[in-house]
Image (cartoon, rainbow, N blue to C red; front, side):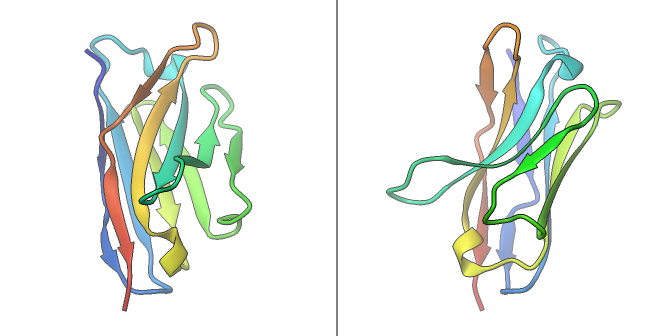
Length: 120
C-alpha cells in the first residue's frame, strides 16, 4: 500500500515560516515516476492546488496566491517532497495534503494531511 506521510504543520504567527515534508513509502511506489504536489483545503472549500513539481527535471508550478512566498522541492534520494512556506498569512491556513500523481497511468495518491494554522 502506498503511503504518503506529511509532517511539519503547526501554529505560526503571520509573517512566519514553516517547512512541510511528505515522505513516500516506496514498497509499491517508484518515487521518480510521480509528479508531487501540495494541496490546501479549508472548511467548506474545494481542495486547491498550491504547488507541484515534476518527476524529472523538477519543473515547478505554484499558485498565484503563494508565488514568491512558497517553494516546492523534492529529494528523490529520500523519496520526499517539501513545501517551504515563508511570509505566511492567515489565509494560508488549512489542511495541507501531499499528492503523488503518475502522469502515465493517471493514478493519484493522497496523504492524510497536516494542519497549518496562521494566527497571532
